[in-house]
Image 1 (cartoon, one colour):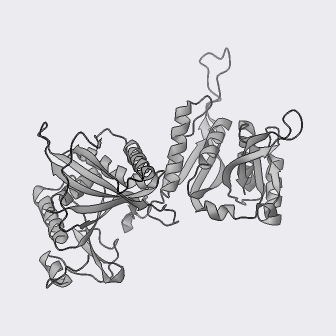
Image 2 (cartoon, rainbow, N blue to C red):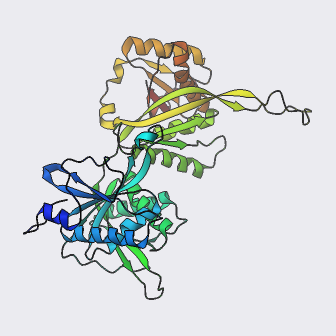
Image 3 (tube, rainbow, N blue to C red):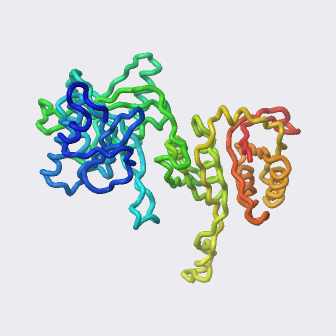
Length: 449
């Protein structure tokens, strides 16, 4: 938090709020109580408050609102980590009741488990950073304008609507761009969806950071209290890709199978692309060539940064298909172990760095539907040991050929005693060989191993 100008010093401000100042206190050091004070660059202090959750009583909520109001009134900067929709609603309400326009940015982060639960996965939470704007008068929202968010609204649907509207405004050159999001003020789930959408939108195509300003109002034709957040675009947003970054969690994708609806394939590809840009690891279990092909094509659509992919074989329980005239005697085949392909991907270096590689320094291998998986796997192993890398191509309109390429990479650790390889998938064009299609350019899947 930045010290207020004038006679009120940082120490006296903190005493006014009933808190002690801790120099260079890590944000994760205190999991109890209502607040901590964190040291920021250039000796700025940011007050970190823990918002009340769903079980908080009115007295605790009022104390939280008062501390937010006092800190913003003194020109301070606040940070909140909200776990759950009720906590997100408390933050938005407190900022709306601060007595002046309070701007905030919200993003996804994660908090480590307590020491006694270190084996538990980190929890994803919403991280708000808020500051006041002295003298700004908020424009009164109109219920008929903007996007209405309900408890059953989908986070990605709202986030994509925000990203799409921001992109259209950017193309028209009509920035600064503004839009209102509305939700019932007492609906914690709707307020949670609204906050999650604001945190998610910067990771979608257009990739622009957003700032929100919350307000509470009652429309004339509906006396129910409404929360309105005025959203503004701040400029290009950066991808979160650090290995120990705040959003390094795993998203499980479910690839479509044979004869999939094109709309389902597009949704799957968009989900994979968006999660990679958010800095999440993507995991998919592929059963069959169609699932492998859909997954590879989706990974090729990674934006700004390439997808680094690893394939592994795994065994899962399965059942044999019933044979004719077996009746109900199913049985000895029920405990079969099925081999499936596990795919793990994460965002890696920018495309500009990847495209600067001298691909001619490595050999080119080509996978066909008739290629033997084991022989191709050995060839990849030889080339990676000899030259450090190899390019493996397959025509992307040949599902079986793409499946052979992925299976070869998954098989390599079994042949070499655990040697693991990763690849970067991309799409391009190549000419076919002889015959009637000689010289014709066709889409090709490129795996740089």
